[in-house]
Amino acid sequence: MEQFLSERLQGKLEKLADDDPKREALQAQFQFEAWVSSAAKRASQIQLVTHSLKPIHPDAKGTNLYVEPSELGHAGLVSSGVLGDAFQGDVVGNAAALDVYKFLKVEHDGKSILERVLEGNAELASALSDNTEQAQAWMDAFAGLVQPREGAASHTKAKQMYWLVGDDPARDDHFHLLAPLYATSLAHRVFLTINEDRFSEAAKEARKARRDKKPCDWGYRDYPNLAVQKMGGTKPQNISQLNSERGGNNYLLASLPPVWESPEVREPLRSDSVFPRFGRRKEVRWLVSGLRRFLEEGPDPVVATRNRRDAYMDALIDELVLFASELHVLEPGWSAKSECRLHEAEALWLDLYRGESDEAFEARRESEDWPAEVRHRFANWLNRELHRRLPVGDAEHQYWTAYTKKKLDALQEVLPHV
Figure 1 (tube, rainbow, N blue to C red):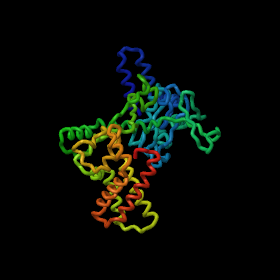
Figure 2: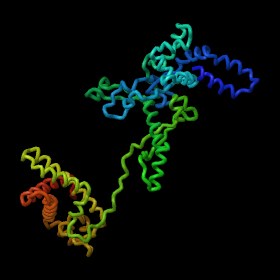
Figure 3: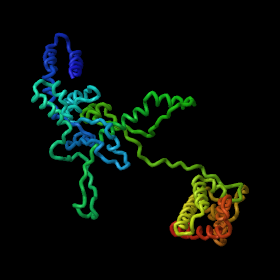
């Protein structure tokens, strides 16, 4: 403790001339008993917290909370509860009194002064003062940092949210009014973790190895589209102590839907069927493999078995509809090219808008029962995929065909082009 005060005093004296009259007053101010007495009085101006209000709005005045993360459940969610005992408390209040908290953070034998205060450590009391009552009064004042202030209160500049806890949203008494606070201890851990992942020597070495196409015994993490929120402007200490340590910087992880990048859709030319191409789709391979493994187990012919088999069929038919819709966006008339060798039924199915400029094609599309042929060819393809390990035949073909018709007929009520 003496060393802490000496270092702070020295830092201030270095800014003064040797003959400056303020030096004597400053030295008196930093006498141990005088400084600790002043610190104990100023301790009421600051509060140790884990959840603070000022990051919500810098002019908001209301309740801040100190809650040990180990006392919070997290139910598998990322929250302050995941911090456990490894967390840093934050300090809010009068920025001019933050030196009191810095004093209380001083460690001896791996334990801070504040921790010893909260334990009621007798050795600390003896070190503070020979006067037992004086020492206890100072310790009580310092312990007040973690005590909640009387009277929970929000503020007009704080955020508030009505949360339905009853069943009737038309009744006011079925709502709770929530006042969100900033999880400052969690935010600080996130900031330190991201900085370690971005700027540590290990991360730099791993990135360099990747650029140079060389092996590395460890990996690294990237945070795409990371944003930085500045709090406190030129005086981040007015928000909190931890915010000051971060220079006012607070990271915001990207919470955005993925950017859809559709692969280029190629015309299905030089092939007599699109089903082999359909079968190479990642999702389709996964579904066919799952259906095959399920049927190989020889499940009992019960409702649960039929439901699971039909669930695979539903997913396969959904993929088939998606596959067809992707080809529907091609320039109409592609099936008229000399390179197109598709079966007529598949061309009528997939070149959806060719009939707008080709009356003969549209007439065939309206008059012929090409959907039945498409279902037949789909069932043939599925049987071939399963036949590698299963004895499938006409009965299965008939079921696939009938089930596909039932599913597509239902879809056509909302998707006429299916």
